Amino acid sequence: MSAGPFSLKGKAAIVTGGNVGLGQAIAVALAQAGADIVSTSRRPADETGAQVKALGRKFLSIEADLSSTAPIADIVERTVAEFGKIDILVNNAGIIRRNDSVDFSEEDWDAVIDTNLKSAFFLAQAAGRHMIAQGRGKIINVASMLSFQGGIRVPSYTASKSGLAGITRLLACEWASKGVNVNAIAPGYMTTDNTTALRADEKRNAQILDRIPAGRWGDASDLGGAAVFLASGASDYVHGAIIPVDGGWLAR
Image: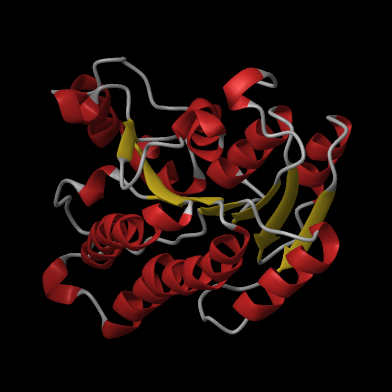
């Protein structure tokens, strides 16, 4: 991945939620392809930083809580101060709350929408201003299978990921002519903290595995190839796409 059209050598990438799970795997994959990494997360991203630096890339960790838009200006300013530009933004930070829709609280609704959708849009807006000014850039939103399906017991998560898919298409329509690619990855069932309860439920776990043609839960590292593709010159004519990385779930 480090040569040819997939090379990210000399690029600066922001990955939100880059300290663990999907964000960490994406950050490391981008670094393997040559990018320097800025990771934002609520907690220090020491493990991610060690992996990125071991690849010979630069790394900046920014502690930021994206449950509000307050940290966004600082994230962008510190990235530009450190690297002089923003080439890639991966909007990965997200949370999930589970409850029956008849019992779902306004607090849980707002918490998920604010993090997964509102902050993602306004960070894309802030980074997009820099990208438009420099005439190029790649924005990758981490959507979900629930950008296509309804799901159960996760109304605010479904709403946020459906909204993120729409925002991906809207920004692609506005910014494609300005040299900025906006696309998304839609992970399937992945072995992350968000799915611990599902994997621990023997019946539900069996139902999920039975539906996945690949016959296994996805690993965070499975997202790396799609992320590098969408961040690289190989995807220069790809705009507004939402690429499922789901083991074939949506195909069944």
